[in-house]
Length: 209
Ligand SMILES: [Zn+2]
Ligand SMILES: [Zn+2]
Ligand SMILES: [Zn+2]
Figure 1 (cartoon, protein in one colour):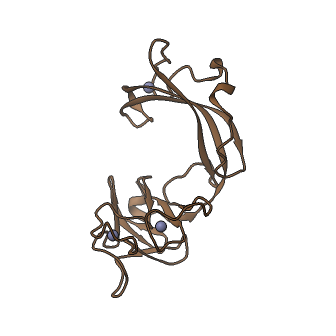
Figure 2: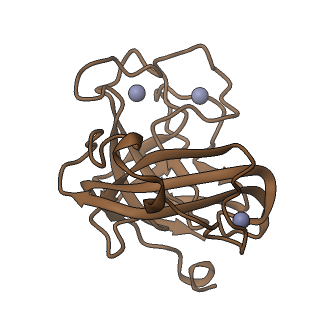
Figure 3: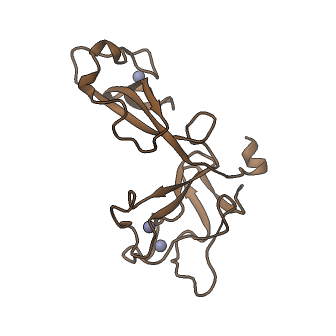
């Protein structure tokens, strides 16, 4: 893949709206191609309902009861299975953020802020010294990395002050290091990020490798 050779350059994106779909899912472990990734899981289907330019709109699309049964998906998006009539089927109004990208979805290298205070309503639950804004980025394998969160192998899990990764630079031109003497960090991370099948570094806004 190209990113192995060049590294992926990050870009800063932002929330621009909300998208609502009618979502139907059923049959735990029955779909041979769950979420389109070739492994077993639930059958799942969406029909686009509405979009707007309000970020984090938790009302868009209304309530489940607003939408008659014939409007909902009738088959799985990821395999030929049809929605059964004799089994438990889950339906929900599914709301997702739209980002300032071509598709509205996030992809590798997309960097964005998440507000852990929900607009000042709470403190960040991870830290006592935090303005609540955590920088997130999609890794080359499209996993999400909350750069300002606690690493899964943090060696000071009860400490809510230190940062496992030390971040410098202005987004998207961010560099992550293990820190220098005097930085309040822990032994996790060591400046690299490992998630799923990706393990690499973020330097001046570019993933290496
Ligand atoms: Zn399926
Ligand atoms: Zn925080
Ligand atoms: Zn830590």
